[in-house]
Every structure is written in C-alpha cells, then in structure tokens.
Image (cartoon, rainbow, N blue to C red; front, side, top):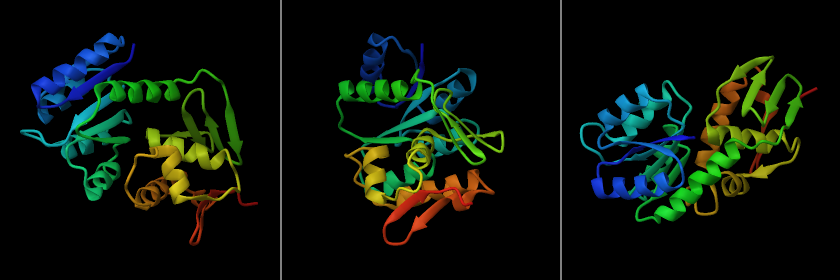
Length: 222
C-alpha cells in the first residue's frame, strides 16, 4: 500500500481528494496547513505528496523546499496559479508534477496511479554505460558503484537520454515525453534538470552533451 500525504487548506477539496484516493486503496494522510503537513511528513513514510501552494502559516513553496532537503518523495503541486513562472518555480524547487485548478479528481487519481505504476515497474532491466549503471527495476542510478539520489523527473529524463545513447533530443521532445503534452512552460525546465543531473553524475558531467540550437544527448566519451 502506498502512502499519500495531501496538504490542502480547502477542507472540502481535501475531503474530495481523500475520498477518491481512499477508494483506490491508498493510505491517505491529510493536513490543512504547511506546518501540519511537514510534521506529518516527518512522522510517516510518505511516498507521494499532493501539495497546495496558497496555504496559511507556511506556503507550498516553503513546504516543497523543506521536503526536498531530506527526501526524494514524489511531489505533485496543485495550484490555482497557472502562470508559467509559477510552474517553473515549482519545478526548480523540486516538484515532480504541477497541476492547475480546477481539475478533475478522477484525472488526478489516474495520474498518480500512472506515476506509481511507472515507479514500480516489475520488469527487470539494467542499463550500463561506462561507469554509470541504471537499474530500472530498483529505480536506482549508480556512478562508480555509488548510488546517487535522483528525483522522479530527473530519473525519467536521465533514463530517456542514457537509454538512447548518441541520439539527440530537442527540449520540446523531452518536455513532451517526461512532463506530458499539457505542460505549457518553456525549455528552461529541461535546462534546469540537465544542470542538476550533470552535477549529480560528476565527474562524468560531460557525458550529457549540449547540441547547440537543438537539445541534448548522452554519450560516453572514450
């Protein structure tokens, strides 16, 4: 059973989302402000956080930032703020998904189901490129035998590149594949995640190469 934490100050909205996930067999924890949410997160083993932005006491941005300091749990932001800069802020703070209100609870549940399905794929597959190994079954990346921590979107992006060595992907193609067709931000979200990936796989950052005016590719340098 997967554990979901819903941090949403609108009690009616919180109840509706909770009911939908309850019927799907998830264990749901609920909080109505940022401080309460962080307290619950620190006490329970949470797999996924559904996080509102505009909340009393401590806003969602701050909650997201604090969670990312200690955990790679999946963070899905729900917000009435649909501006591109707000979405970019969410991703830069470490959120994995950003859904704008109003939304369909059924679609939200379907997205979460798909996220967990992707994360717990039982098909064993290992990709090894030089000193880097990706275990898709364990959702794990090791560099020189040492595991590195990647957030869900970083992992998906890295797998896309490393599984297609030498193939060049445009920012648009990567956004469509990793963030979905309904993401309306610009290519900066890809640049931000590439920068983070390069830092995490150091000293092999040069394996993720920039193709000027096109996009990115992964290629092991001989």
